[in-house]
Length: 472
Image (cartoon, rainbow, N blue to C red; front, side, top):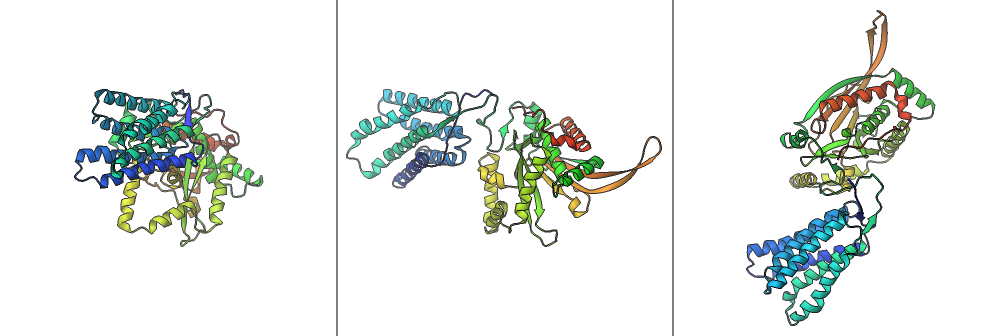
């Protein structure tokens, strides 16, 4: 997709905070006005109270949570506001006044949307679009209403606050340079992924048929011959990579596989298929100490498909050591502890609310970054426990599409073609996958490539020659 401009908010302060405050005042004033209106018809309450209040709240929500990456979503409350003003226009006495106002509201909706989605290269046109009607409202219309009671003035003050908030936003937004060939977010995308719009019909429909990950999971049992991996690990430990092991090799190989097969980094949310593009988020449950009463915590580490084995090891080990050397106060632990304070019935309602928000992509990025249920891969090491790998189910909450488990090394005596016997070492590995994101041939190709990397792990010391991007 060719994008001509990307608008964003450089910081959430100053005029941005003032814009949010004015929009909050607009909603509060309208709510106070509605409380003083006796016997309001249901239609009036829905269109003249609930609709603008919803637009006010949406505007503030998007401003704070999406202003830096998805400012285009602010077009949603603007359209809701235009519908509200259009309904008001039908009550005007003058037919010409009604027509002119409807045309103005349509222009506001279209021009604002065209600007924030990047079609128009400048926001200068928005300044008179919001500023002139506000001046006309103050200098012409409101002068005719002198003598009104305070209650009658409340809707007018609400409208003025709304106009002022939009004007301040148009003054604050900035256009960010876009590199050639880069992809940006647009309507339908989430803050943790971009929607795939070129999927075959079967993959577009399958999330509506198989509605949960548990009904769409496939189980794969595999094994890796690790003779080369053991030599590779020994070399790296001699080079000073303290603690480097099979876990880091598998992680580096999976990250490299995502570079060649970016479909591995897809996920399903809200019955739609998305890709994380070049952000690979790996989750893992760890213990601070290998004892039965040691508490568990979950870490999340982000990688890039171009990362080498050293980058993967250093980044992952840094997070693990940070967690192990500190008390139980990681960001996820703090969040879980806070949720644990909520009474059970209310917590159930909160989780249901979070699920609805996640379905529509409304969860803030700060939550999905912490959540162990959101990510590209969940991996667990059964080798550290001395047992074979399990087939771990996928979580219906969140969007993790692949769960990987690997077990302890085992020795096998095999007979070669010449009749001689050779001893080999294997590591069993299981994958539980969401079949709605990829077909079997794609998964098989990716696993074959993963085997190739495990047979020759020295490939992971060099960045990939090409990092493929998923189809959008």
